[in-house]
Image (cartoon, rainbow, N blue to C red):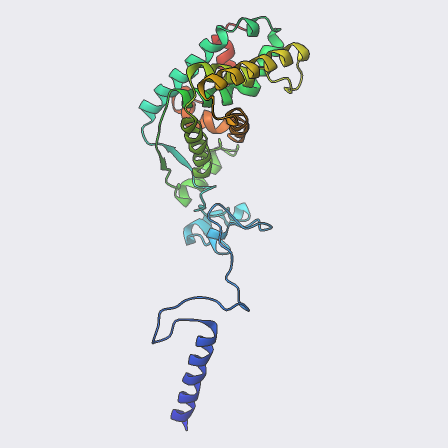
Length: 293
């Protein structure tokens, strides 16, 4: 009787497994039937409408020592996230890359200093334009100088070290560069490299970015708007000479340039300048170099 019941149970399991498309002894297929759709998986982060990170697979599990030490401190913080948007990275060769980045920043300062129209603006407008556009100008400098770099993932601190650091310094820590942010940055650079812009075209594009009339708080909006239009017109004429057949080149450059705003200045400061300058404010640094104070 027991043997017969075992055979019936085994036959039922095989039939049920075949209906779901699970692997059986005679095959290696692994799929889901239309009535049981496969769950969506996201590499870049949690799915829409979900605040929890999918890579954790539910509530994070901590070591016993960590749980005991942090029991009196309230809920345990989340475990180290493995998603690309949360994995922190740093430069693989900071000495070489930071020197190259400092050179690009120095060229950006020289570009601003050699613009008479920029020097004629009120000091307040100069500061506002710098705070609004130093990051896109720096990115264009990286693209123009073909600066390449590699990053490596930062190891997660031990749980005991986390607790000790939180006890000593309760203030929020400085945000770290993430793998997803660096990936967006490198995609922007590769896009500009593929367009093969000349130095003159880079200069006109930098002028169009610098003189942004939509910057809040400007005093000379109409004057800056005129400078912006002049820079775009000069860029369009230069592209017509360099790319006479490609009539859509100007529109594509403007479209790609708009993506520069997706790279936050904090990412650039933390990745390229923090190893050399610490937590110095880059806008203030540029202002000091321009003798605007």
